[in-house]
Length: 413
Image (cartoon, rainbow, N blue to C red; front, side, top):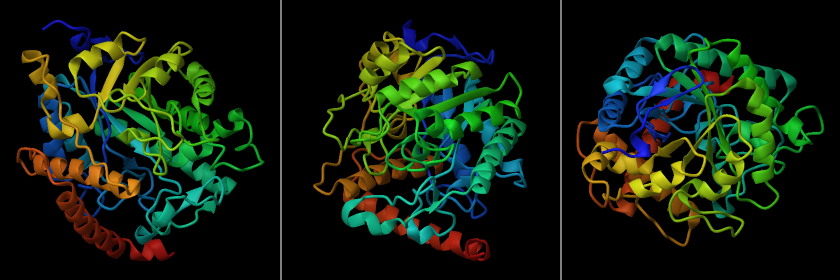
């Protein structure tokens, strides 16, 4: 079929993607004990590559093995062996698919039972209501900490290029470290890294500069940015516009617009400031406003499950459409759309009263599907939320124990 969704696009790095459909990042928790890509992870990405997307963005790859978003995560550092990463890139690049590694630092969003480095611009703890005890109060970052993070981002990007990835995406959304610097709620510094939006964006801009100096021109460089935090007094659309303007001189290939954080999981369609998000393509209205001022290509992610919605997004100054959950449930959805444009992808919905548990249950249902595909099985139709959550918590406990045993001496040093 011939639609805008299935037309090719050439990025600023001169890399062409065969269509506008992108597998957006999801946390898989499927790494080996040494935080390397596993055989199951490679099988999962191979399935997505054969499923028809033009580009795949990986789940979080952490720049520091002592600062993890969760157990079973992948980390890529200066001394990491690249053998498994090269195999991972090859698996994801089948069927003329481009693969971009999402690189990240969690900042304060580190579970207390993980241990390790819990850093942030300021010592503002996560407010998760009765679940706040799950996260420790972060340590405000010193100049040395900040310089270390900038170097780590640059090194990880360079290693990703060596491993055969087509590019990297810097994660500056969803309440992770770079997003924490951008938000006035979490960044209460009064030095060059805090205060004005120019100062709050300084770390992100410094990371972009460092990576640009470390990689080739024909290597995709992109940023994932919140259109808004969806918290009163937080990073908002006007801030996003200004950051987009600051990034313009660096000729990024694209900026992916999303929204939310652990405290306000807008990426799951739930805000914390009473703003109503669209039922599908959650952030399109915000992206349209931001895209008008952008000089780089724009990608929008959030709840997309229908081809007509993809077409609507692309008709609003947006160039790429990211899908995550829909591709966990139906990995070959793009191929199926070619035959049946009216097919609606599946998105699990959990509407429990406890929003934190609701979010965890939704994520656990998604991760259950990812694990099944990685094991060579088909996704389950209508998985049980409570069963998926229990299984995920048991698996997380095992992986956390493995992580702490593996890195106990480092965690305590």
